[in-house]
Image (cartoon, rainbow over all chains, first blue to last red; front, side, top):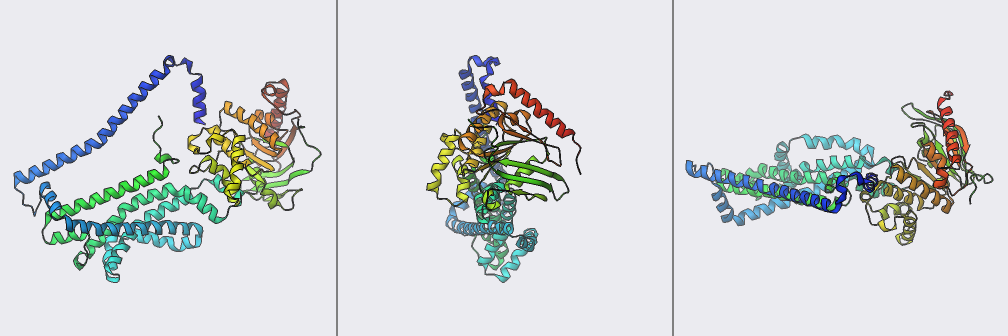
Length: 297
Length: 265
């Protein structure tokens, strides 16, 4: 409707003083906007990098000037050297943690969406089980992890931890999405006698997709946290080999540079997970959802 | 050329004493009587909130009347009749995640028709609303007027015998609305379908309809009916004619009377 109005305005736009050279002006305006956008993008990438480099330089300088011993605070250069020296050990640990995180995430995605669909289809199931989903969510996972480690084999316990932390945002978001369907579209589907399955598959799930993807983006980070919490809790049990276990172990051995190296890999993993999920979300929604559309030119 | 009213055919749908009270106690309709014959173009004209949309939803079977009944004299069962209804909402109500083609295909897909069978029908109806080239576009990429055309195409793809339209052009600018008015009349004549068109615009109702049913404020009922005895096709000449102006005056007066009428309890 707006663009109809725009085109109506444009065709009667001779009162506009710029209308004499419309093409030239439009093009130069567009070019200016484009270069402004480009500058904005460069700043958004460059400024954080500059801040990082400054911070690292300051850190390195402080450690050298003050002569701080590496078991108190290792210099960034030492952390980097440790990262390279221990690369095989750390890479193995990273892999273990990443696999746990991915498994936890996939279980959380399937469980969250599945439960939400189940709740949406049956009010009785929703009333019966929703409170317990909330209980799982609000009980601090750090407190639950040791218990899980008693009852479950360590690998399973870590996985369950990752799942418990990550599934709730998927459940909550998917539930919201399934309930946010355009009422008129619901009427349209019932006018054409759509079955429950058709309504779910053709209407409710596509409507909920942006919400589901939002939930998954949160769940990705949380499943990493869940995995780390469980590994830390299991740390003293000693059978694990994930990154968080390495951190705990290095702590006992006062191998602080390795703690930092492992921590660095953990945050790197978190960042990668977040951006991969953001990219997936963007690709899935770019043709139709407001959140994924570029600003109008 | 069609006659303005098709007197001799039996009614397609009859509403008798239809009333609707919502769970919150609001009475939307009370004692609504309406008869629509095959091939008619009936406008339901009334103020905002008079229950016009509720009446349309009841005819479509989307809402159940609290009292009175909807009868389909020519049909074996009401369900059979309701399945041959097309509905156009106030908003285009398209699925934003689906292309224009998929949106128009939806009613056929829900009925389980094979895609290979449905595709030519979708293409034909898109052609009819002038959007053949836009089958692959997403609703977000279209203007408001084009989206409404897609919505009309979707309603027409099942070849309904009754097309229900709920203020479909109210949100559009006048230029687009006039164009869609003309297109709608053309399609109505070509398809020989029956239309019930809800509007709060006196001018729109007189321009389009073969008969205008004027409704009272809530609880709504039909206060008076006005035959628009002008031949189709109607075009810009009709819109600027003195006959049109006179009919609009009559409709306005009828509407004013309906507004003033005290509510019968």
